[in-house]
Image (cartoon, rainbow, N blue to C red; front, side, top):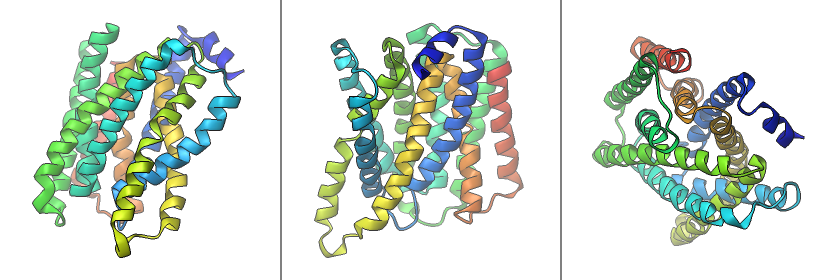
Length: 302
């Protein structure tokens, strides 16, 4: 039924509206997902494995028994999914291990929208109006400025911050690459939900193996598995919403617009950091978050 509804609205004004809503839902979910992965006292390499094992276990039976199998012609696409998302997650975990969430996350999200717009222009021939370009630049520069403000406040892990920032920059490029690639893949699939759940299956089996190896190597210092698995389960449910929503948004609407709107996740991340991680917001960060929201609005309505 959902598949028929998606097919019925594709190419209509309703599809554009739904894509906007999905991109904003993805932004909120992705901010929560990032905070769950980078939590005080949790090893980002291990928590990523706990997340992936859960969404692999949840997605596999749905992929096998609920939706039709994707055609064999999409097998090379899923190989690409595995490679590009594995590289992205390795870079992100390495960045989180070296730098504060409030610095790494904004750099990743600041680089990705502008790069995605450029990639989408090459792959899909998408074009932006002048006002939309202004919105993308305002959004990206405001996010990077937010990272700079956060950088001045960080006191821990300063000796590894340069490495963290370099890794965050390349993670942002890979974020743009996978956003564009996933949009291409889900548009090839006749049934988008079949593609989505096989995406989670393919994306979910590498990191649990790597994380288990790293966990075993810690010896007596191994953290207990129970708390990590509980957090991983919650984060996996959030991941379904985050990645599923943005991929459906890129099928129904413009890839560049969906990517830019999703970067309002930085605003949600700052709110999460303020409420749950007890981080100070202050007037400068509040202004920057308002500029990020304004940039996203210009992208949508420019």
